[in-house]
Image (cartoon, rainbow over all chains, first blue to last red; front, side):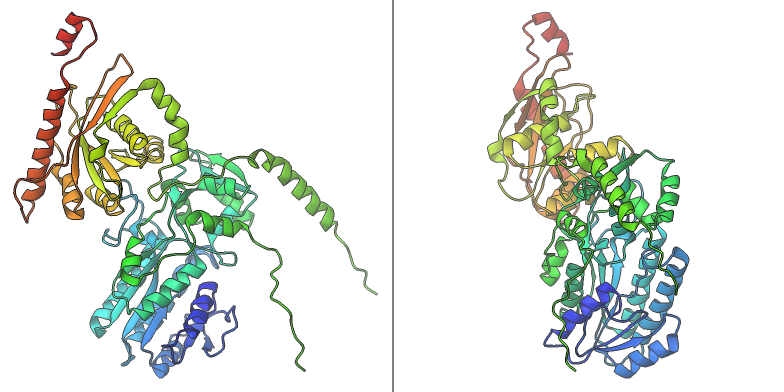
Length: 313
Length: 237
């Protein structure tokens, strides 16, 4: 509930008439003003406290967004550990809640992998075959949730999100694209799709309302290639052909925008997915297309006006 | 009293902004395009169209058989090195004003990404099924042949995608010359299965029927007509 996506989901759930009480856990405080939600500041390693909070609350619906994308908020080693700890604690705690009816977990289209001759636009029926560490982390979350769902006999919805971008979302892809000089693969320049954070939050709320019990791809319509995104953002494109990617990754890391393995894969092999089933199952359609999300990413105000602040005392 | 040190931040910031402006100025008027859901770039296809016209002058027929909306699977014959699926897909796209995606792009750099930008798909049943379910026109090829008037076998697993998606299948007869620009792409009426099958026989029988239809259309085209009788006779093999 503390991250950008978690705060958005919490804010939208507060507005839902069917939501009675709302409890959230995160390592960071919420980034939005939440009126009724109860928040607990806990580390992923504090498993017993997490289990206590979840079991005492005994929810009907549990949404697990605790995924640390490598190089978004922390490096790969910590991201892997935090994600594993949080999954064990939250999904494990879910198994102890007698009232639980449904669980929705965050996953990503990285689970499909981009090995040679894999489908350009995988559907939910395409076998999971991750080819990056982030993809394997997400596949583990799905597996844990599925096992608990089977054991408890509850609905388990898995939302496979395209890379989530937004003005304030910590994302290695977003950070890379916003650099003044952006490398891209000259010979591949493969297309990818993304999703806006607000749309991703709406998908989670829709999944919770509908008690989703299957995996769904959440992808903004359309696609864009890295070079097209760079031109849209009026950045300087730096074409690379192969071996110099290692140097570019190091330089980018020094510049404050590390490029993790799954983003390199996206640049080389692309990352698309078929998101049409979300409309059939949830009646959900992203508001922004992929090119719109990219434009939105570049329209980043340096100062955010929050409106008039009134003195009350 | 401590003295506040002021770094020349503004000056440095202005210098960076100026440098960035100079470097990005050439991109200011660069068109900001995007690709479609399968990575096809309609602007690139349009830009390459004059080049394609230099090589092929395709006369297209039978497009009235194709659905205006919804997906359909098209099956064309292909002669070795003729790039039949590429020119047929391109010509049918122009004629129908709908993107026609051809199946059979490789998945290695640089050919794979290049062909994907002009509408290529991988020759996988799930890839074809996904495109058909997304209401796309997809063109697959018969097995490659050395003879321009021979339709090779049709991969029944790809036809199976159309059976599963419940979309119509159309034969497309193509013919081109290695020496001239003249080429032809003729779409036939929808191939309907003779018997209703529940199992995999449906796709096997439909694949055979499609091959038969394409062959019949090719036979109807007649032989090579260069205007030089001995050459036409030799081309008949």
